[in-house]
Amino acid sequence: MTTVEGIVLKERSVGEQDKFIDILTKESGVIEVSVKGARKINGKSGSSTQLLAYSRFCVDRRGNYLCLNSAEPIHIFYGLRDSLSKISLASYFAEVMRFCIKPEAQNGDIMRLLLNCLHFLENGERDERMLKAVFEFRLMSEIGYMPDVVACRGCGVYEPDELFFCIGDGGFYCADCFENDGGENYMKIKLPVLSAVRHIVLSDFDRLFSFRVSETTQEKLSALAESYMLTHLERGFGTLDFYKTIV
Image 1: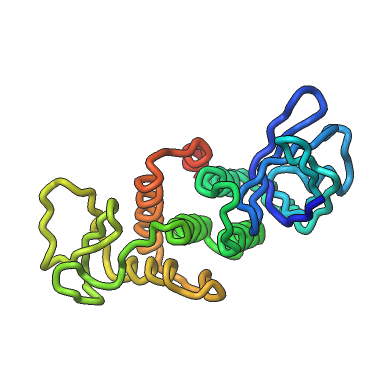
Image 2 (image 1 turned 90 degrees about the horizontal axis):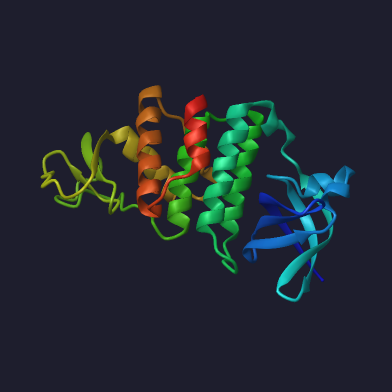
């Protein structure tokens, strides 16, 4: 028997009583667990296996499957269900995690990222657009797609007033060095957006959510983060499409 802590990313019903759940764990990436008699489970055990629950799971391996022996909740994030936009954005986070994180992948910061985003989202302590941008850029950095935001690739200037960010390779050119031959997708941004991206991808985790930006900067940062992530993952997400219809 193995005990793991994790966040439920998806539920899939099997027959009339059973289900499979996908769980993001720190030690083993995303694992699939069979829950027998799921619809008969109630109380704390039942809530422990619902979508977005952060719980402690005891599992057994039976043949090719991991089966749930018992579970107890650590935090259920009930507050996410108070708002359609909150639960929709959280579902988007979960869908992205399921796609990006493979079995046996070990990265405690990735689970910490999701837990922190869900915490701030549940409590309404951060703007949803800010949380979405932090999630997208930091996750990309954690899985090997960190943008190159140190300096202009042409002249090396560190703080250009205006710049062109390459969505495809994550680098940027200042306005003086930029020459677009039409072969790459660039987004024109200003220094405050670049500074926000630098903070998200380079700061220590304890300071990750400790920044504020103007409304104009937030709009551009949100568009840049989403475009960067979707381009590098080379796919869209249905949960994101739905979220954008309600905000």
